[in-house]
Each structure stands twice: as C-alpha cells, then as structure tokens.
Image 1 (cartoon, helix red, strand yellow):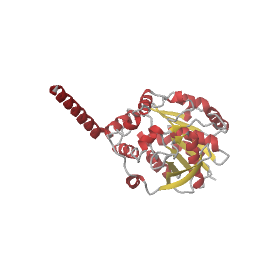
Image 2: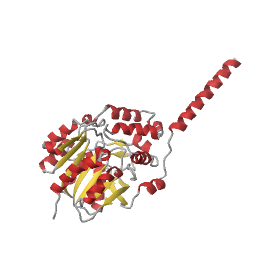
Image 3: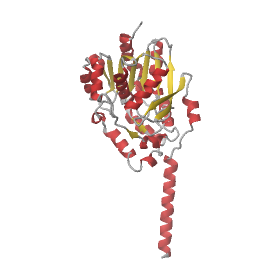
Image 4: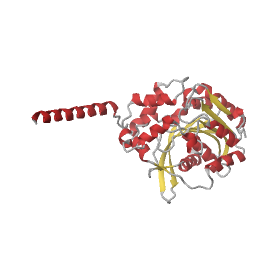
Length: 341
C-alpha cells in the first residue's frame, strides 16, 4: 500500500512538472496598452472616437486607430487589413502611394491593431463598415478609393454598396484575397482547422498559449513559397495580438448576421450596376481563400481579365509579401480612375 501511494505521488508530481514546463514554454502574457502604443502609434497616427448604434438601440463607443499619410489635398485611398492583422500591414504600399501623390488612410478595424473592440462583444461586416464610415466622416472625406485584404476586402465591397452616392463617392475598389459573400467559398482546410480548435471549449485557454515560434509557423503557412516572413512583421503580428484580453475576445465574440436592405449578393450587383471600377489581386498560393474565388468576383462584377491579377508564389497577404511587385497594378488602377478636379 505504501509502495502504491509512493508511485501515485510520484506520478502526480511528474504530471504537475510536465504541465508547469508546458505552460512556461507556451504561455504568453498580454502586453500593456501603453507599451503597444509606444511601439506602434506612429507620427501619422491618431485615435478617433466614434459611435455606432446597435440593432437594440444601444450606443457603442469605440476608439479607432487610424494612420493618415500624405497631403490632405490629394485623392484618398482607404486601406483595410485582414483577420489578425492591422493597419501596419500596408505600410510598404503606403510609402509608394504617397510618392504617387495619394493620401492614404489605413484603419485598424475594431478589435485589431490599437483599436478597441465592440464593447458588447458582437461583430459584423455591417458594423465594421459603419465604423469606417464614421472615421471617413470625421476626416471630412467625400470621395475615395477603398481596398482591403481578406476580411478588410469584405468590408470594402460592403462599405461601397452601402455608402456610394448616398454619403460618399467611391472612385474604385481594390480587393486583395478578399472574402466573398458566400461563406463556403472562403473556406480552407488550414483556416477551418484553426477556427474549429479555437471554437472548442479549450479555446479560451489555448488562446493564451501562443509562443512566438508557434505563431511563426502559422504565419509561414499564410505566406507563399516565393515570399519570406520578415522578423519585423512577425514581431508586429505577435505583439499586437497580445493587446490586453484580445485573444480571448477573438474566441468569445459573436458574429452577427444582420438583416439589411440588400443581400450581400445584391450588394455586388449594386457595385456592378453603379459602374464602380474594381481591381482584384490574389496570391496564387493562398491557403486561406482559394484563388478560385477570383472567378466568382470576376463574374459578379463582369471584370475583364486585366482587372484580375494572380501573383505566382505569393499567398494570402500579397501586398505584405511582395509590396514592390503588387503595388504596380494598384498604382496603374488608381491613376486611371483618379479624379483630378
């Protein structure tokens, strides 16, 4: 009996030691907001306080981080990032666009980068678009180009269909590996596995276990074979994800399916019928949203082949993987449709 007790005590002690070692290796704490502001709030940054009203008539207050580059008299390009990213993902593009005499507004969507999340823990493309509009209205911008990557691409076409010629004029839309209205058309094995794990009962715990080497493995899978994840980009993703309580918020937030005046398919038709120019860019090796989605966008907008560009060897974030290559068709597109008045 004493021998059995000794074995059980040794076994329990061993398990405790293993769990402790596991937590030491994998557990990553949050980073204070003040530290993140010191690192990622730049000279062109500003925090804009906005309000939107929920479907239950509750006023929601948010502080949105915006980077505003270039001469305020120049044509405006609004850029929206994807999931887990931030406004910083477009910095290599922004430098070139400013040189081409554009004013670039890059926005941290709610709950990303340095922006606060929706206070009620609920998100939707409609709400994200409303926040973008509040920022644009605050900046007194009445016409613009808008573009986005992945989730930000979805916000871009939704925003355009909602506000074009009602509150602002959309000069053109740039969709970069963007989400399509039908969810099944945006699925991938890698993304589905990650989201299913995070949605499990262990999700809130696992969300805290994001060591840098594991995060690097995930991001390397997002990039294509012809691109290299730079240490600076890896560190930025890794640190901004550790915004206070952000990781559990990703798990617990509710995705709303809000009833609006148009279906999402009707929104794409509105863009086509309004003759808003559209440029579609894609990484051929995108493992999150298949390049086949480009055909859906091409058909929805009746685009010529010149308006759909697929980059060999690049993945889900082509503008970050190879900014020098991917910015070329963007500049040509903007220059073609910019309003010189």
